[in-house]
Image (cartoon, rainbow over all chains, first blue to last red; front, side, top):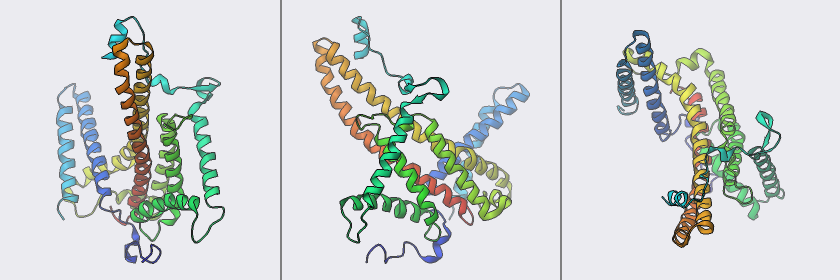
Length: 77
Length: 262
């Protein structure tokens, strides 16, 4: 069978859910976003309150929440 | 270490740094015509010539040139666009993806091809410009497909516990609007910048040791030249890979903007 004859994917699949490999790139971006988000919130709280430890809690909470979300989305089905 | 020996001997070797990449040919300041600007124009002319020459006499049984053009086009069309975006609507994105791939590939390969030997993408403005095109397209296509509310709401996948939906929305918003474009541009820039710097360091270092060092350094320069050769081969691989990754990720971002649901 030549390349022209063979359908690339089943026709009903044309809607374009990206292939599973692309999840790896997305998860990496998500984790990076989680660290930045948690760190930024913690840093902001530190600035408001004049403390210096909330940024560490924020970073850890951001990583934890993001890992939980990645697990929920990609790890449970 | 050998650099320190040279310094001790009173000779001076200037280690290449980021200043290496600023090469105005004429003019000065922000509007100077620089070496990468000329290189990218050269690449456009070269790609246009290759494509016109390769497709001038199209035949069912392709000649060598047509075969080469079709191989590159087929890679982008089938392995990237069709497999990632899906067979129903990938065709309209093939011109964009093929342009990105061929432009980045030729400009990357220029990093090691004499006499050009300057990877355009090691100046961050070029990857940023390409990323902006991709950025605008995948958001605009997503908004067109689903409407602004639908697109922004669709950032959160369904079936999550209600308690973390707000967090996931912020996270996915940050991912799609900040992290993805920034990493897309920085990945290409960083690979080309660092690769070129390493090659220049090894080659000019080896040359300096051979020409200006004492007998010990002259001997050491031989493995250094060998290493420069090995790294050049490795750099060729990285140059191809980065062009491929950039194109593949552009397709992935478009696909996830169009997807019914993330």
